[in-house]
Image 1 (cartoon, rainbow, N blue to C red):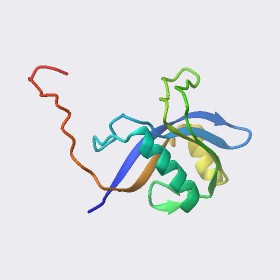
Image 2 (image 1 turned 90 degrees about the vertical axis):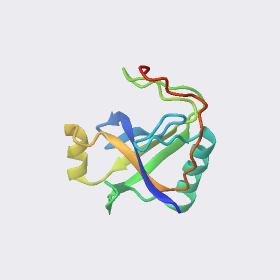
Image 3 (image 1 turned 180 degrees about the vertical axis):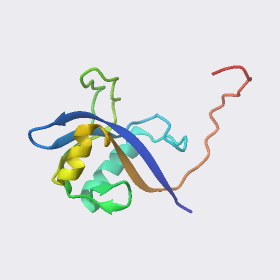
Image 4 (image 1 turned 45 degrees about the vertical axis):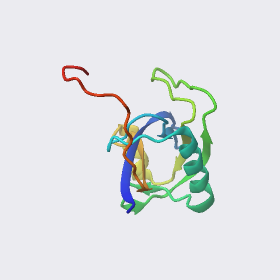
Length: 137
């Protein structure tokens, strides 16, 4: 049975003049809020499927938002934005133009500072082969 998942990723750049936010939607090999990991190959499939089948911009997984994806790509190399850490090769990046003035004010105040992908996944436990010896990180 597919379980609904959430994954939060940060905004890395804001174009104040055009009301566009740029951000990471998914990064490969980084655990999400449920400790799940997604590969670069699955990220690319997900990014393509979103553009082909959905293109819906939502707000907090509860309502549609008056916004549009104006750019979408999967990084071919590691990328760096301003003083932030690296965005890994294989990450899905988008630029979202926000038409809703109240939501834009929330972006500018810092109240809204990330993207979160909502979806369904068939999860499979993976044995990493690493055993916790206690006292480690």
